[in-house]
Length: 95
Image (cartoon, rainbow, N blue to C red; front, side):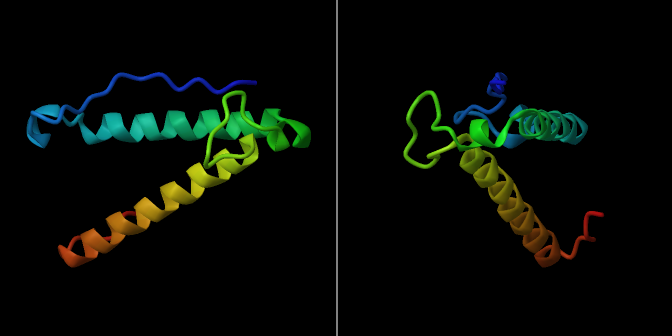
């Protein structure tokens, strides 16, 4: 199974966040679809498929499994950043 995550780029360097950011509900939906695709990829892949090198060599991802792992840890890292920012701004935690 090959994961193909095509989407349009909603952000432009010359515009402001207020004019280019999609609604939060749309961002949550995109995150949920992306996570479901990654989970489906892992569940449908054998250990050998997860260990194979990518079809196009990549300096950070020596295997498909490493790419999935890196995506997951990257998401966790940025989730932590959002939590720190929310706390600094006196906002409640996201449950």
